[in-house]
Length: 269
Image 1 (spheres, one colour):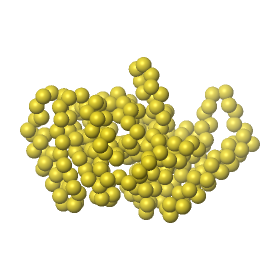
Image 2 (tube, one colour; image 1 turned 90 degrees about the vertical axis):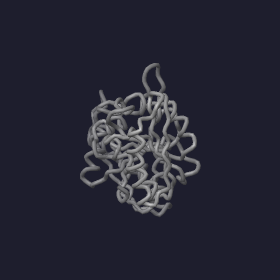
Image 3 (cartoon, helix red, strand yellow; image 1 turned 60 degrees about the vertical axis):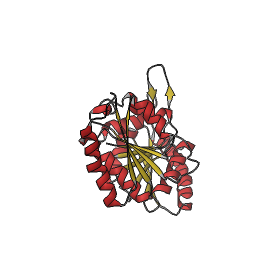
């Protein structure tokens, strides 16, 4: 997870900030700067000359980012691909055994939807063994000291729970595991299971952890609690209050959390 990192780079300041933030988290990793020239644009005929011009422009932009990453003393590699961005990014990640992907995204708030960007959405919807770090804007203080884990305490959140514990151990950060129940009473079984699972693992990994149980609306409570933390970790499937998160389509909760909060979000499939 921590040795090879793919950065989906589109030449914007947003994606540059995401890449630089990731170097603070994983300074020993190799960073694959991947740019995809989308050759499927309607009404555009790509001759060899046009492709070469676009490839050269993309490579020049990637080189500029590479120099900035090298100042952070991390290893880098550049890949300029062509085709459908989400498909080529996932293919590259499989070919190079990369499970951690980094993206920046923007949000356009509409009446009914929060748009995340087609490439990010398609990667999340199509991958089942990846974790995706989403960074919306420049992080002023890149030191992660406090991580919030949102869990539904079922088997569907196990990858997110294990990932959060590993991140907290790697970064020397404190971890808070948050469980939200829509009704007034927290099931006693949930409390026992979280103590037996998350708390037990944390103690053996040397991670300072606390369990937090709340009742109410998940999206509101997650966003309110996240203000106190440096990063959010959450799962992307399953039941409980996650059942509408990502199951072929990204649901309202994930969209709202990513769109509303400026904190980095680590999503685990």
